Length: 453
Ligand code: DGY
Image (cartoon, rainbow, N blue to C red; front, side, top):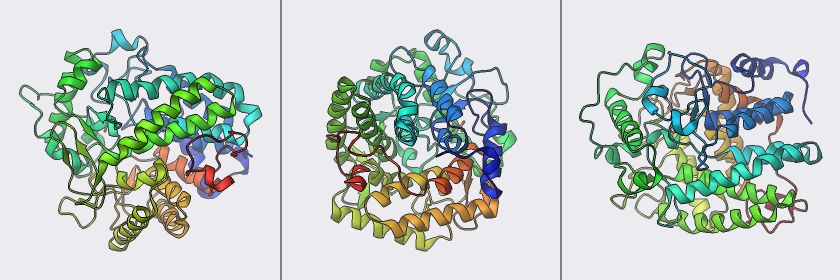
C-alpha cells in the first residue's frame, strides 16, 4: 500500500522532498550538481523510494531508463537527456551519438538492478501493474542477454566489466592492478568537473581518471564494438558485485515472467541463471576466504574483500558453511568500524575511510547486503546494518556516502539513492517478493521464494 506525500513525516518526508527536488520530469538525477543526468542503477534504486508515495512516478523512472536501451540490448550507464556542461566526461568524449540515437548516452552499462526493482514494484499490486511490467520484461530480457553475449562471449558464466565505472564502484582497490596495464599515453589536458564540486580527498585520484579516460578512448575508438572490446580491451575483470546483481536480476525476472505468463522469457532467463550460477564459483578465493574480483586477462584473484563480496548472499543461496563464514567475517568488519558496511576491508592497508569506494559506506549497498542476509536467516546482522544506515543519515543527512569511522558524510549532497533507500527501507523493512504461488515457482529457489513456502 503506498502512502500519499502528505502522510509522510520527519526523515521520510525530507527523503521524499529530495527525490522530488531531483526529479527532472520522468527521470531523477542522483545529485543536482555532481551528477546532472540520469544514471542507470541510481535511477532503478530511486524508483523504490518513489514507490512509497507515488507508484506511477516509480514506474516512469524505470520506463525512462529502459527507453534508452541500445539496439544491441545494452542499457547505458548515463543518459544525457539535456545539455549540461557541469559534468565530465560528456557526450563528446563518449562519442555514441550515432549508436544511441537520441538522447546521447555513455558507451558502457552498470549493474542491472532494474529487474529486482521492477519485481518489487509489481509485487506491490500485481493486477494494477501487470501491463506496465509486461512491457518492460522484453527489454530486461534483451539487456540480460546482452550481458552474456557481450561480456561473457567465452561462456565462462561470469560477466566482465570493461571499465571500473561499469561496476558502479569506481575506484575500488581491486582495479589498481588491472588498471596498471592500461596505456594512458596521450591522455591528459582534460578538466575534471567533479573536483570543482567535491573535496578532492573524497574522489578518485587524477591517476585513476587518466585510466578511466584511456578506457573511454578505447571504447570510442572501436565504436563500442562488443567483439573488439571482449577481445582487446586492456581492462577485463569479473567482480562479485556486478555478477551477484545480475544473477539476482535473472531470478527476479524469472519470477515476474512466470507470474505474467511469459514462458519464453522465463525459459531464457532460467538458462542464463544456470550459467551464472555455475560461473559464480570462479570468484571464490580460498586464499582470501570469500568472493573476490577476478582479472580475466591474467587469471588473478584480487587480494581483498569488498562490500561487493557480501552481495553473494543477495545473488542467491550460498552454501551454509560459506554463508556462516561470510556472516562472521562481516561481523568482524563491523566490529572494527563505528558504522557499517565499509566498501573495502577496514583492516587492509589500502582502506581509505573517506575516498569514495575505498572505504566509505553506501546506503544502497547496505540495503542489498541486508536483503541477502535476511534471506539467509541472518536477521540480527541485517538489522544491525539497517540501524547503522539510518543513524548515518540521522547524523550526516542524505549524503552520497559516509565515513565508516566518524560517520561524516562525503561526496554529493541531497543524494537521491540515499533518500530512496531510507524511505523504502523504513516503509518496507521486510522483503516483499511476488508470492511463490503466483510465480508458479519453478524459478531458482533459495532467495525470496523461501520465505513464502
Ligand atoms: C562519476 O562520474 O563519478 C561516475 O561515478 C561515473 O559513472
